[in-house]
Length: 235
Image 1 (cartoon, rainbow, N blue to C red):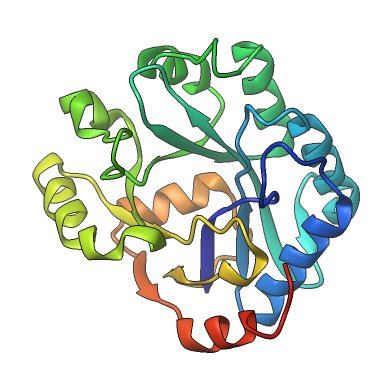
Image 2 (cartoon, rainbow, N blue to C red; image 1 turned 180 degrees about the vertical axis):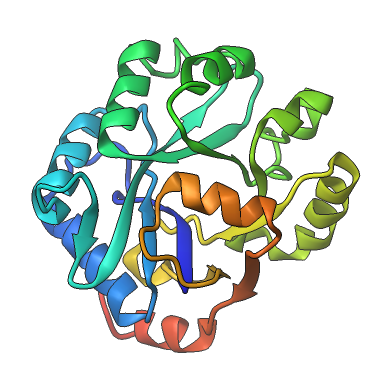
């Protein structure tokens, strides 16, 4: 199974959300041959709740699971912390909504501390990933051993030259790594992805179990077809 674990719905945070943006990304993931897509918009965008509601309306099937034309969809959020850095919390619409409620209001003037985020999310069953840990101004290494409270560290598609550094640090901390495209434009989905064994019912919990068993490996996607298509297709 191919899983994309870091995808945004909006290209520009300040512009209004349109359902067509989400549909385009879901279709792109399916067309790319992905089996799993985690939608992880920034929790501090003004229309975050509307995005979550639209995700349920488009992908909900009345069973609690999200699905789009054979694509398994996971609800999540990217949460910025006071210390500088970002954490992906992947779960269900219900747990994401509860986390947003516990942290609210989440904005540039009211970001949770790393410990505050851990405490607020600890009982909600999230897969918690340290996003782009090497990014300038958002380096997560400053958190030291506390990073081990997360489930994994991310190799980000925008920072592939630093993949070796992330893997080395993760190894020193005894943590697994996963990859995420950090797609803001729909053409960026699948720049990197994760391979995992077939799972009958894939959830954040089963993803964590696969991580603990060492069954998830990351791969680079085929970027040249994406770049060439981007020259012909508008955003």
